[in-house]
Length: 448
Ligand SMILES: [Zn+2]
Image 1: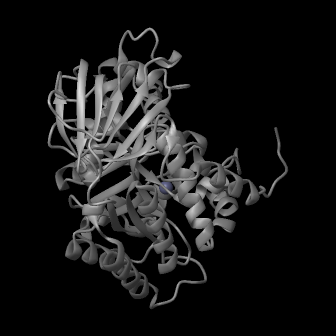
Image 2 (image 1 turned 180 degrees about the horizontal axis):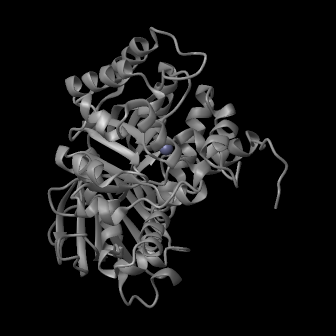
């Protein structure tokens, strides 16, 4: 990202800073310079010179959201393999996606960024899967995020536990690859991080898990892993370890604040307590869980245990969007089908917190509330939309009425990546045309 970004001023905006009181600030100015918010408040604009002055009378400014779990290559496989469970779905979708060329990887990342920017997301945890893992593939994804001006944690997907490719030196080779990727592209100040991302405990050897953990601790990298997505996976962990997957991770000394687990649909109460005590986080992916029939994660119990919970879209082939407001609405309502006690239901504010505050603590990609001095990762929605009319409760309407909601501006690390509805870092028409040329076909004939 550019060392000096221009001073941008939003004048007279409605600002939802997502602070502890969930205030709605009317007639508020927001001034951005050098990647940070330098002033926020009524008349903050007074006597300041700026490069760009935006009349924000019709804009609602909020913190940008975080998509805390996805797999970027899947944007090329949207709409495929519907009606299948995880196992068959993996087989069909990933057959072609495992070995994308670097142009394909760039295209997949750009497609994801277009959708995320257009729906208010500014940062992503990309559990970046290619099998076998390849350094040039990680480099292509890193370059695509950097060029898009999008903040990303690329957790390099690793697996050595099953299949004919399981060779004894695979763990060592894959950890070395992660170390090299971190050396080249782990640049937190520039909005790009590298992490280790073993696929799941039962799909990796202990040698790989422990080695990845040692590297993560040594270099200060995130450790991101799928755990108990389906009941079958939870059962497999018990058969293999005689305990739960989380307990096994704890025995390997891997439950620490650098750990985040995706899904946790079938965690026990003790697992949740272990994760909370260790400072580890959970990423809930409600739409993917519904699409693949994986189960309803016990969000109420996770939160009651004190665990940090963020939200993910999961890969676009199991969702099939990357719209985090949609995930927030699903997270809010899905619990209500499973939990009788209404006091345990998550509110829309809880959902917004899971899109901002929790991932900020878990991954450090951005900050939670908008405040002077904080990073300038913000989005401005058009208030003149049916989604925000009549404006009874803007926080709730963001989550519950998001369809048709328009993002007009997106500022990431002080850089304007969407300017009055137009993407500035990605040639959207060219990306969509290229995506159409690479259209994928499903294995089975369409059934509906
Ligand atoms: Zn996943």
